[in-house]
Image 1 (tube, one colour):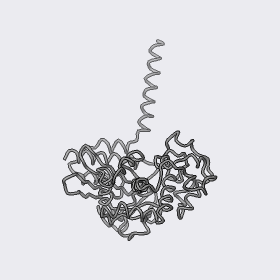
Image 2 (spheres, one colour):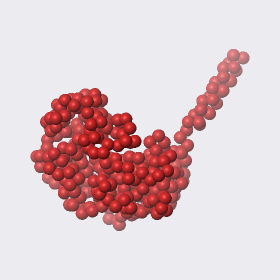
Image 3 (cartoon, helix red, strand yellow):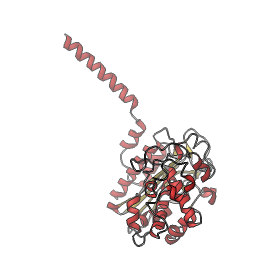
Image 4 (spheres, helix red, strand yellow):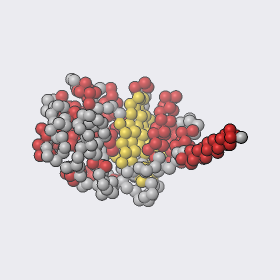
Length: 343
């Protein structure tokens, strides 16, 4: 009798547990994942629109083939302008790849040293950033500095800083997150300091130097340092779940590029044609070759896939930091990649 009561209690417990598990299952992710793989990339992008994205762009550069451009949804929802695969897009943290290349070239020229410290380069910050005399340039590039992430500071996305000085001010005098070199933590502050260092060493803006050593040699004319430098009509609209209006003119400091320009850069980065002398060895020791980016209204996945010698880039223009949109975007990207590999 006791055993039967125990078994019944266990069954009830398992049933309750199952019900609660089903309640917390991320069904939007399951739905995106279990759908049969469509025949074409365009069909996959149409499914993405059905899953809540306002617009999506995919660029595929398969070695030896003509690049492919795909888009679905809206470039501008309010004006009913269809998504344009050649539109400009805020690439967010993908811009760090360009800054890492710029630093590499300055190191290769002997104008910077990976082993010099933040205090060496910015003595005025020695007393305002903890461990400034121990944080090397190498640590900053590799996100091992311990400097707090400026985009984690209060109200950053609601009230973004107006310039680099205002952005830096938000983290000055804060305690370090860890002792330099002992841990890893992604921090946008590292790359804010890197951009300021590029300006200090070259005497020009960081983007002017990027244009000189990266964009011009590659013939890229649709990559820009800021939304302030572009025709707003050419910029794909950005949307945040729960916010009705287009937020594309909110300025968080992102670089802007077309998928085509970004794809050309990414291939040159990965095949080494972007580098001279020992620069590729330097770069490989400090940073990665693929990247993603996320700011309100804009998600970017930019990767080179060596096994098929292909660059695949995906832009999606709808975000929600508390929802599943980033994970769904990754699922869509992986499904697009399966189609590319299959074909």
